[in-house]
Image (cartoon, rainbow, N blue to C red; front, side, top):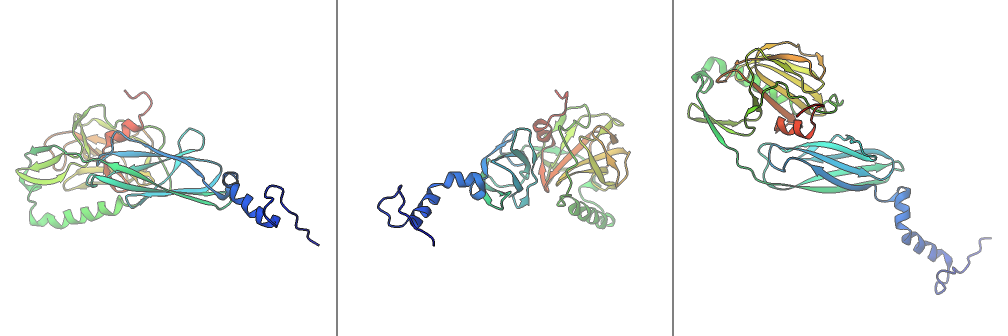
Length: 309
């Protein structure tokens, strides 16, 4: 026979069973450590600035073992990787060139080993930025293309649009990112371009000073997903670094890799040239992160390669 005793902690309560329920409520913090409460200790970020076109590193500190750590920002899934300090994982967020200023939510969800879930919302306050304008003179056929190349331009645009939204399931990159050529960046990311007096799309990459024929190094490990001649970009190589991160090199004089090739950091993928819509030899490097157009220089500064200045 079950005996119900009066609880010595609660002398005014008639039955100890009522007290048990009260003690469970009072034991909330201890229960959290046992898999019934908070898993996420803290969320923070680092970035050069919170402007359109920037890369943000989201850091999440977890308390205890987890089955999974997921999240989303700007409508895209986040991919977390170990960040060095114990129990800290990081994910890359791309703030697209055209993102509006203001508060943008980031959702983080952790599932504990016991099946308990902790979901948080973190806010990124994106500040407005005014990009400069540049005026360039190029061959008129690159401003008002002849009718016979319109279909080609549209086909190539569809080809590129199908590549960048895809986040391959494996992270291929690691560590820091190399500068593809020794020269400094000469044309700022995001600058609005006016070709032959006609406004065009903003400059969604960075241009680097380099002589024609200069070897172009892979900034990190990846797989070649496109090696082709495009109307506006000339000879191009696109590397998939995994998890939605891509490098796009344009205006090459030579392509030294083929689609499907796996390349290692520092391997030559092509040579600098002046093909496509350009005014002279240089390297144009675009980075896409979960389809967001972000500044390649930001990526190198947040993840500098060993020995980088």
